[in-house]
Every structure is written in structure tokens, then in C-alpha cells.
Length: 486
Figure (cartoon, rainbow, N blue to C red):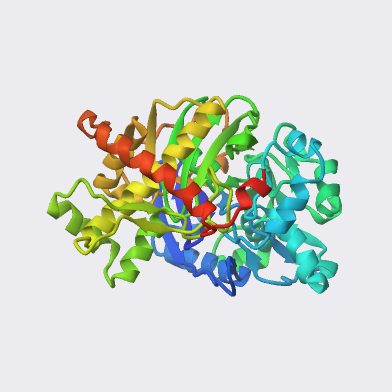
């Protein structure tokens, strides 16, 4: 059996699979995010370690942990864990949705035209390199003590094995790695002011990176088994769905929203705010666009009106409401694709005294879908045409939301037939010793097809949606970072 650990923003998932790729057992431990200031988003790595023990404690009641042969790791990308020479954590990890490093991104983008030729990606505040530059400027004592910089899942590896390693898919989101060569790039390191010796070795996703230390293995109830390099959460999510071939794609409705497409080569397209990264398996790449507040937008609305998300969705379905004049911009924590603006903010437009929570709920679902339509257009410009999408993430449990996405994107959307454990399953698959055979495709249920009758309404609403951001920008209601960071 093989264990996949997926370190998400809201929780750590553990999934055990057998040689047939089927899930044997799963467990989850919840995590919280700290927001110490404007645009700040952090977690304490100690909470991740505690979460591993919670997950393993749950799993031990469902299977013999000593039967687990290998471990694969996945996790949220872009985080920056600073360690001193003794391995001590120096500060909380700045997360993927931390937006403080705007001026540092500006400096990187102004450093020379060859920056994009090596990175293949725009400098965005959520990425690792600008965050580390922010620490150097605002917390010099921390930076001066920093001997090692790790991504979140790679800190779990360090705890488990004592080894410093990462993989190309996760490292692509640092802006220190050239995704085309799948290796650290000296020009990028020099521009960001980071030394090569501060970074972990880069191994391909299925490669062994070390063994669980004896004392940690004993505490977790497992053998001192190998841990493979693993991959970033979206890359492993794709592998959990069996996606390793060009133009296969998925839509993820988690805290953030993602449109993901597999590619047979590195296809950078920074002009469209497309992330062009290495995949978690060798000689494969992927492109993706990101909506920073997807399911989080719905959770935010639910908390605002003192309801639960299931209550909001249930009431909307029961009402039969399918159209609303209200438009929502889902930029609660800034936005990546296509605006690349951490200072962008959310907006409800066209409210009236007749507006109710049903209108607002429907507008949120539509607004997230419209953001993904922006991403779809960017991917098309970058060379990825996706005819159908598999839907994953907590939001994919809503049949209504999937229908809206199918209508807005104009493609078939296939929900998973079973539980969504994608990234953890992908990590577990990377831990399997036989990588010669293709991963089995995920089993999906009845797809949602685009409703031709909704096309006129959808297109009109999308035009209104697209018009709002420039107007808000001209009025100074959102920052102007998108132009500065291009």
C-alpha cells in the first residue's frame, strides 16, 4: 500500500491506495490560516506536523500502518518556509495567497527582458521568490539567519526524513526554477538574491528523496519507508485523475479555482497570466490559470448572512432561480488570472431593494465561473484547447454550480463519481514503484452539458462582468498592479 499526503490550505489529507490504485482508507486534519495584516496570509509549519500525527492516528484505526510501503507528498504551492542552519523554523510560512510582495514583483519584472525567457512566468506576489525578497527587506534578521528555504510539502519531507528536496512541478512556482530545463536557474537566483545552497535538490516526482527517520516512524506507527519527491497540489490532482496527456484538463473548485491543462512541452505565455509549469512526472508540463477566491467566495457570503454553504445552495436550488441581474466580481483576495492584481477587490453590482440572498448566491456562482472563462480564453491563447473538463474540489459537489460552469465555458463538465481525494491520490500514485503504466482515469458521473438556451443570458452577463473591472480601476477602487507587474 502507498500513502499520499496532501498539505492543503484548510487541511492535510492522507489517502492510502493499493496496487490497483483504489483507495483503501483516507483521513483529514483541519488547518487554519492566520491573517496578521492587509494582504497577509500565513500558517505555522508546526501545525502541519501536528496534522500529520492526527491523520496517521485516524488511519491506524482503519488499516495496518506498517503495511504502507512508500509515501508521496503533495501540497499547496508557493509558500516560503525559512529554516536556520539547525533546521529551526524562523517565521510563519507566507502562503500562496499572501499579497504583500508587490514591489518585489515589480523589481523582478524590471530586472531585464531575459527574466521572462528564463522563468516563463510573470512575477506574482503569491510566488515564493518575491515573498523571500519581502522578508529580506522587511525582516532582515530572519533573512540573515535563513540557511534553507522550503516549500510547504517539502517541509513535511524535512520533518519525515531530514532531507532537503523538492520536485519540478512545485519548484516551478518559486520563480527560481526554469520550467523548461526543470532545474534551478542561476540568472533567476541572482535576480532574486538567493543562493543555490539555500535551496533543496530538485528530483523528479517519482524519485526517492529519503527514508522516514526511525524516531519519526515509531511515533507515526509506520516503518522507516521511502518518501518520493511528489508534486505540487494541482499537478498531483491531475495525476489523481489520470491526466498525463496533452489537452487533458480539469476545473478545481476549492478555496481557489483552477483551470488546468496538460502539455507535452513547456509553453510559456506570461502575457495572458498563464502559469506554465513542469508536471509532476518526467518530460511533461502543464498550464493553468487561477481564480484566487472560488469556493472561498461562497463561504464568505455564507458567513456574511449567517448561513451555511449547504443552506445557501439548497435554498437556491429549491427556488428554481436561474437568472439574476446582480453581477459579482470574486476578487476578495486579489486576483491572478487575468489581472495579476493582489489589490483587486470583490464587488456586488446592480443591487436593488428587491435583491435577496438567492440573487447574491447565484451571482457568486456566476462570478467565479466568469473568472474561469477569463482563464479559458488565456489558455486558448497559450495553445491549450480543452473540449471537456473533469470537476474536482469541494465546490464540485454542487450540480448547479457545475451546470453554470458548463454554460459559461461552453464545454462538458464531468463530476467525479466518488470522493474527491485527487492530489493525495496523485501523490500516492507517485509513490508506486512501477511508473511504466499509465495511471487509470478517474470514474466520473453524468456530465453537465452546456445549455444552449442559457447562452444569450450568459454572454450578456459576461460582457457586464468584463466591463466592471476596468471601470473600478479607472475610479481608483482597485489597485493598478496588473500593469506594473507585466
